[in-house]
Length: 513
Ligand code: C2O
Ligand code: CU
Picture 1 (cartoon, protein in one colour):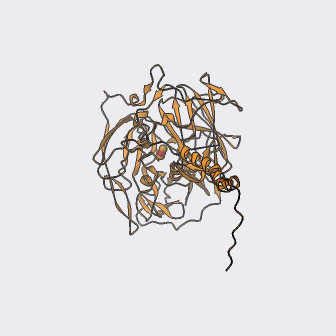
Picture 2 (picture 1 turned 90 degrees about the vertical axis):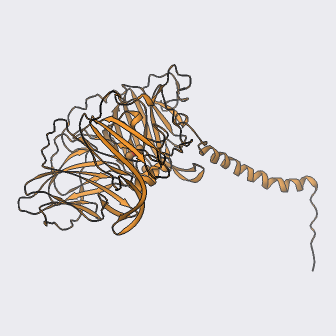
Picture 3 (picture 1 turned 90 degrees about the horizontal axis):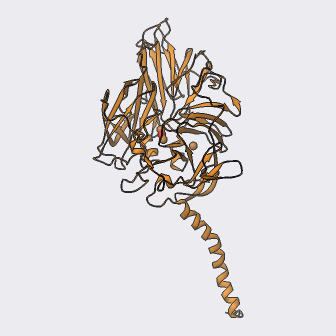
């Protein structure tokens, strides 16, 4: 056996041989470690300290510096120094006003029985979906929430209803999560007639998927409806099982021949859903807002955005047969005389385009001269989010939590350019405001004003949307594919001069996504 003893390198060379790999490793690891550290939101933090302030184009603010592209960017509005920062906790319904509708809701964590399977989930008053809340436009709704057993805590967010900010139900932004045994009272005036829904906004990805939700319907003030039958259908997938109103089988709704039916469909899943019918229909409303002069449609499907609602008007044939409404291939609503049925229908090739549907009418404001213009550009890039490496959603090129905080003032006319440069669809949801679609891919909307709170943005698509800043506070503007939200696809809108006393994480362990 021969052993080779190599010539010993001189001291310095040897030191280098040891040091070089270390230096190289540090050179690679240190920036990664910094990125990792930087992506973690420190234990407890205020949403006010998240990301950077974006004052938009056309802003009168002098708080920022202009960057290429004209966007004013700057430090966060200094909420500690502001003359009198207003707390969002002030933004409530008139405390002196009596409630018109009172509802007690109790949340539980329990097994659900869905399509013969036992699935872990959540209930509201013992069922999922929870009870439907029904009110008339202008009524004050008071919901008393008690969390009996949801271990992570809960909140209730009134999806699509533009409630006062302190009632918006976002854990860590507008309130603390309600722990087991805890209570919270929500009070708001249902100013908008239409179809809405409620769901938890604490650890919302698993809690919404697990069924902590229900529908909320506001009837028009006049009480006049032209439909004799009015029914809600919540489409939800529990552990892979597609359901309507919590049941894996088709929903059967009794109606007489010749009757007109208003069917309110809510998509509570993470992806868009196609709806089609056995007969002609009119699309009465989108996300709670009535379509202006909706025409009769046949042989076209409707796309229902994740988080969105669509109200269809159907007429039961006088022949005694039923109308079938497919909610994707998996489930259906069958409306008509008992026993009547229509077989499963193939999906029509064409889809209704809301950019051109219905007739134009006044928006109530002028979006041609906005006071703020923002960009919400969605991309994807490698990096760290919440301490985890991956290829994550970016907003204007930045990863959570370094995303824009859109700063506005009351009365602003805001135009936002949404640009999906990623390879997946994103159902974009703005809290507290309804936005109207001005254009898609640069083509101006030419039908009824298309008001949304949940907008299906396909890969490669751009949308220009506009809204009036008329509901002060701090509002989420996020993707309603709640998996994406949990991966950091969240930005916020803030009215200048507002602050929140709530914190993400903290003693209440607030985790809105
Ligand atoms: Cu339906 Cu931020 O939620
Ligand atoms: Cu998304």
